[in-house]
Length: 186
Ligand SMILES: *[C@@H]1O[C@H](CO)[C@@H](O)[C@H](O)[C@H]1NC(C)=O
Ligand SMILES: *[C@@H]1O[C@H](CO)[C@@H](O)[C@H](O)[C@H]1NC(C)=O
Ligand SMILES: *[C@@H]1O[C@H](CO)[C@@H](O)[C@H](O)[C@H]1NC(C)=O
Ligand SMILES: *[C@@H]1O[C@H](CO)[C@@H](O)[C@H](O)[C@H]1NC(C)=O
Image (cartoon, rainbow, N blue to C red):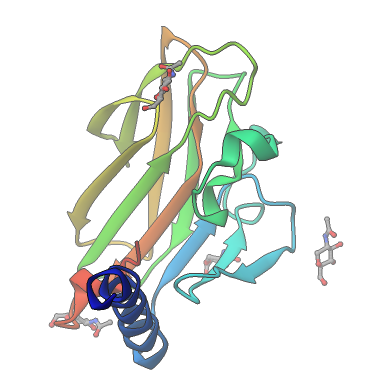
């Protein structure tokens, strides 16, 4: 009986602890962008309470897509929408930041068969003019630590001829604060 109960109880306590940590923390400087979310939309993500906004003000190109309910799975809300870039070799997000501050930048790619082709794509991810990584886009997360020297950063998706680039979410955390590993949420 106790064994069964703790199976249920410990994860629950863990979840409560995470929620308390997130809700009790200072979210100043956090930037959470839900790519493809309709313009002027925002929400607090259910598990973490973190605030996500649409990418409409930080990108001029691409098309928005909402995953089918069956393809969202148990994934957090910020991957339900994505933005894909059927046109142009290089498409960029321009995101305002505080120059001189160290940031953890996280980009999330959840394919979710959004195009009905059941074929994830491969493309390059750039930070400004530098190659950050190559993305094989079936459920991938890329993270980088960066100190911007300007008051904005550019996150760019570059089509390398292996399918249409897309992106689900971009999250930024200023790292001067020591608690940063818990600030990313799940
Ligand atoms: C978004 O909100 C702004 C300011 O409230 C408004 O001017 C704009 O038309 C809205 N855009 C859309 C697409 O709803
Ligand atoms: C980013 O900063 C520039 C310069 O201060 C400003 O013109 C622009 O509106 C800002 N963009 C957003 C999305 O806040
Ligand atoms: C982070 O530290 C740098 C260098 O000490 C400082 O210039 C910057 O303002 C700090 N940023 C934040 C968000 O505290
Ligand atoms: C993507 O990954 C999921 C699970 O990891 C797998 O079931 C699916 O077949 C993959 N799809 C493609 C197109 O690679």
